Image 1 (tube, one colour):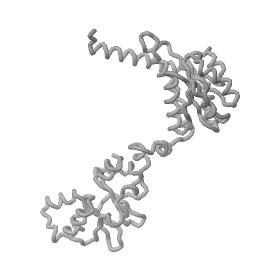
Image 2 (cartoon, rainbow, N blue to C red; image 1 turned 30 degrees about the vertical axis):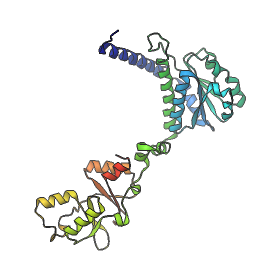
Image 3 (tube, helix red, strand yellow; image 1 turned 45 degrees about the vertical axis):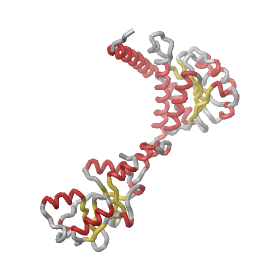
Image 4 (tube, rainbow, N blue to C red; image 1 turned 90 degrees about the vertical axis):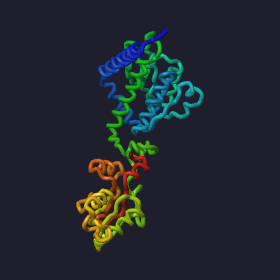
Amino acid sequence: MVISEETYIASARRTITIEKEAIEALHDALDENFSKVCQLLMQCKGRIIITGVGKSGHIGRKIAATLASTGTPAFFVHAGEASHGDMGMITGYDVIIAVSYSGRTEEVIRLLPLFKRVGAPVISITGNRNSVLAKEAEFHLYAGVKKEACPLNLAPTSSTTATLVMGDALAIALLEARGFTREDFALSHPAGNLGARLLLKVDDIMHENERLPVVPCGTLLSYALLEMSSKRLGMTAVCDVEGRMVGVFTDGDLRRAIDQHTDPRTTPIDEVMTRNFIAISSGMLAAEALNIMQKKQINGLFCIDDKGHPVGAFNMLDLVNAGIL
């Protein structure tokens, strides 16, 4: 059977519409019970334990991962494995979030007496308010849907989306309640581009000491060009007799000097340098420095201390190599 492109697109749109309606219904169904759940999770002295099986288990893993990465210690325990030893991971200081759309999943129901025995309160997320799990839990969050996006109304689609959104809603509500910051987020995501953008400071990438391009006032342009060439940053700082930075000379300044037929063998750097330059303090986040460079359309920056002495420099290539750009 040949299916047209329009048929595929129509099917996708129908699925998205059904799942969007499920999320809108979830939005309207929220009540004060959600706030009570959040308060319980905020008071938890242990970890948040998510449990479930099947598709609900997959969603539970994602909820646990989102909680853990946004400031709420959490992990997933498969309900089947909990009955075979993993209950040892759970203490009375923990809070359980049991996920089962039907609210009747045998592996989850079997754990309820054990949760009560260790003293861990249970929050259930189901699509059935009258289910055993909904009634036996201390708090119940309803994530029911009118129908699945599956035309057979069998494959969990709308229901898993609604449950996932409920988990995201919990995670973000707790994030905001904790005052969780970008820096906090980066501590749990230290690898890759995200961690680099949020944590790396200019001190970690800047060229220092003998690698720092610096020439004194009065230096001939030809010597300044040699300094720029040897340090390979496309710029050099110009300093007064006390070592304070009073100007910068860049590749852009060089092009302008050439356009004016400037003789590098006789022209002091003071005559062609940029005096109205931009410099930053060390300790600044590299991502913040990148923002300055992009706004000012410059390729490099010098870092100066509180006395105006240059202490470091870096350019766009350094940011690229560090994974910031």
